[in-house]
Image 1 (cartoon, rainbow, N blue to C red):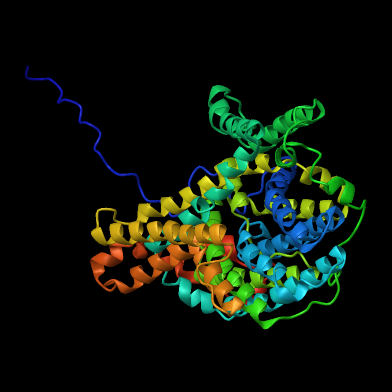
Image 2: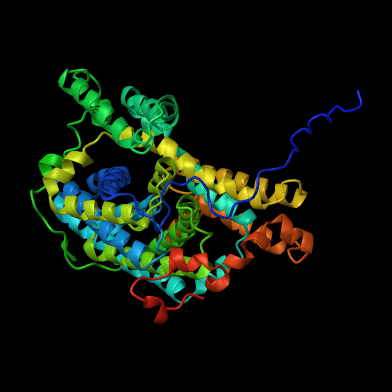
Length: 531
């Protein structure tokens, strides 16, 4: 047939376009949601960061010799300092919507201080608690200098300039996925409370918004609040209904809503203040071990900041801004030492995941959440009510949030050539070693009671054991080293590792959007220029 139209061309198979800013984010850094919504979203961030804030002191304070009163005061102090540090970070640090809270990285050197021989003679538990707390304060104060110097001197800027999308993938991915031990194993401690949270969270955030075509995204944006409230009430009814009356003390501790001891131990109103436990004491070995933890936290935070920048729909974070943020994080650890939180600070991974769930990367929301932290840390009893949410509920939230941060790491693969054998080697080897090496260190420690490195110098053991127990650190280090030593000057290799995509973000003035996202407030850029 002569006049027939040619057959319709099949859609050409083209790969998805590369995006240096994440699309489909409802509110980016500089665009705040309406005030009522922003306040609710800020409260949601506060609820999410409570998990780590309560879990760490709950584990450490009894070992230090403290009771419920001390535990409630440490939680309040940690919350108060987290609020101040989050405000500093969002105003003067990276300016990303990142929550700064207690970090698990510092748990190992803190336990080492708890087990130090010089405290074993003290009989009175309260006296022992005060002495150990002062020891951790001294170590944190010294350790903070590391991040302050590396950050503000611009040293970290010079290091992260060599970070390509390829070497960022293992670092960011394991900053999220590497925390798998805090996910389902925590849920399983009380599965009848933890599992419903995961199911509800997935239902509210993924399925219901598609089933209910509402104009405003309510269910997905406030999925965390809905899930926590429903399951918390259900857990409360289980508790008062006597479901755990004959359970083991361990099950009761994880499942019951009245077992945290925080509401009874917390004062009505109390403002935490520096040196509230007494003058810090200093020990060189402990300070070195804490410095190692501080360095590991610095590397882990670098990965988390990159995920936060992605989910806030900002451009990749310029090295000079990252370095500035690390300097302020050093100040955060200094405040931890001055106030006595028993633990150092880094970027909260779970709050980075919450940005992805809500699709709200607004800076104002996180600043409001910092206001909630300070408010509830001063009004002790009210804050303690929220802090007594059972830990398996938080563990269920982590299953989603840590996964989101890990996925942010994987998303940088869009800049790399996945058909290159060099890419496959660096990616596979670094991720595998990042999981395998810490697994050996952690397994050895849980069986033997001490790490694989067991010399006469305790501080040296702590340094090595802390460094090699961190999954993002090992993976990031291996990837960074291989990526920068394996024929990197070859032009095809440069394209394979994706560094040409990030070239313009290497300097602050390389891209006009950096000014909008990362410039300091109050014209401070004149006095503290970013290069």
